[in-house]
Length: 307
Image 1 (tube, rainbow, N blue to C red):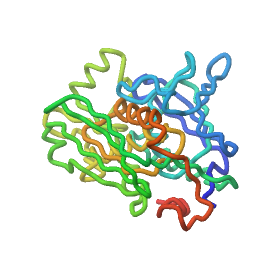
Image 2 (cartoon, rainbow, N blue to C red):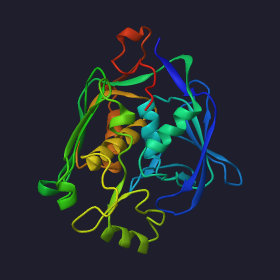
Image 3 (cartoon, rainbow, N blue to C red):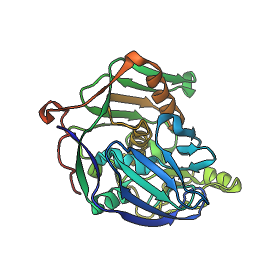
């Protein structure tokens, strides 16, 4: 049987929110089978649980935000991406502010935290959402066109293409495909950092955003070049970060996908619209388990790979 996974023990991190600049403490704790991933705002007078779901996403400007009533957690996508990459099904995320800490701007710090806590199997079948019909969301036309799509596939793979019309970005890889069955998330995707442009950062800060951003947790570019002294971690780090984000956004579905995701210039908003469109079509997906691990797609039954 392909089983659900949670942590063996709890683990903690302290950092700042990318947009709020606020200090935040994060505690990742084991959870019982079928709990899912639940964020808990423990700083509020009465702690509030925010279980992840496509419907829990209430804001997609600059990041993915989930809410339950008035309680919110911003910028959940990098932690969710790490959970997707390591196959974590059940987890409590205790948080002392309304934004997940940015740490180094990638998912690698979250991967390290999860692996250091230990990952254990639970004797309950892991449930997948298997896409059975193509689902696509398109927006804009001509040069402004963007789209995201899910196709049936016995496994999980993602293909993403970017188009930023910026010399520093254009000189790197514009398209990446990552196949969960043959690639290593921790090696190939997790270290890709978020990125931004100085002109946008200045405007965001004037509006009270990006207050915690800097060269130690993002790739920053002026009109011509990358400003980080250590350069890029991958030759195609920009588009790989978009895959990292997409994996986090799609894992907000609450179950791992069996599908081929492809996208052009997509982002948090389009990714969430794609999930909602999928869920609105009862004939486009089914929930499946694997009693025999040998029948599961390659990559899912393997032990979690270390670095």
